[in-house]
Image (tube, rainbow, N blue to C red; front, side):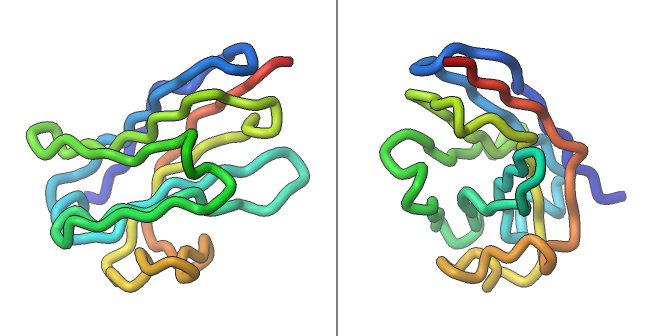
Length: 128
């Protein structure tokens, strides 16, 4: 059974930090392209970054580079999104996603509609 479970969201003030976790089923974690997306009210779902653990590669979109980091923990089949210097515009529901097509992890190919598996999301709210 495919399972992606996000956690770690919450409310912080601008400039604060949060770390989101995405616990995945073992076979999803090992062989899929995994990604973080976010969706603010009234906006389209936006890709933040990807990680392909088997290939040792990760990517982040320019708007979060320098503030966000993607990492992983093989022992717990978990992918993390470390978010620093948060801004009010980072307020959104954050989702973990995965897809067996590893080319989804290429910069520019992180299209939400093409990802097969999704978590339930975790809310991040940043106040000014």
